[in-house]
Length: 332
Image (tube, rainbow, N blue to C red; front, side, top):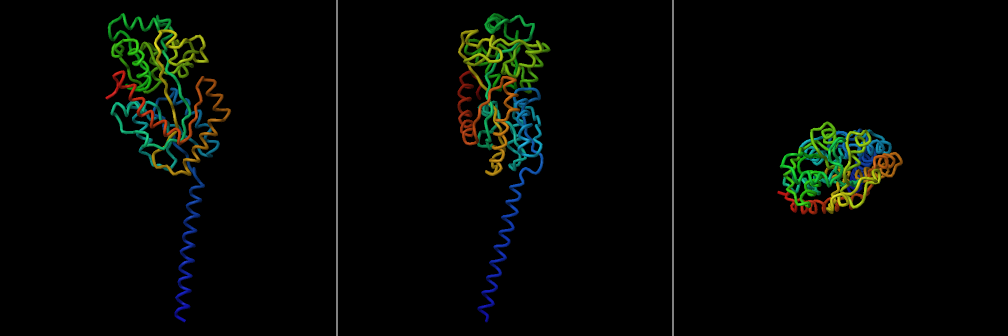
């Protein structure tokens, strides 16, 4: 009799254990399936109006349709991108804080200004890459990049000022590297740090600085408005929206190409299922007519890398960018 009672008790215990496990599993599954159940914050480390800001706002607007929740772009500027990237890396890895990761971060790592290497993030997708350019004010005396280079060589240090991003950022490297390749000390043209492409272009239009080096795509609104004028494209081909603007090599004979890249990422430790949902949402937005029309209209290129490829690319850039920076004297 005691044996039968003992067996029954064991059976009851097992049934209760199975039931509890099932409830936990179902609750966990429902919680995961419900993601996202509230708005998502997308951190942009650069100022409003710049290339990164406009691209991710266009992407976020379409992502909302698939995710069923608002994707709010928040500009966290400062420290040449360190502030925004740090906020992203230190956020809770629950999928409710995502953001852009830019090439500038690899440069900051190279300079020893941050320890935010590729492994501090979950890479979701690379969506864009753009070459640097040279842009001056509409009434600038420089008609082409060769004129500008000759003036820099001829005049005393400090005669001209340049900008485009924070100190040590990718557009700083683009401009300094071009001067270095031309045999000019990059320090001859002081670099005025800014919160991104948008603010630097506004400074250019108002006469605060003499030349900026962000992509021609970012300068298009002011170019069309007649407030600034493009001199060259730092690519091996001309910018399709401005076919009369030569490459830097065509204008100056110097073979110099520098690109930015932009990816969507999250803090390290993001679960695979949430990462997959975000990847799917980003891919659908990337392929959408709305985003494609926006990118084509602004002349932005579309470049896709999924999570694994984007992670390996980010890892390789941490090394490759540093090699270039050390060559032009911008490393540690």
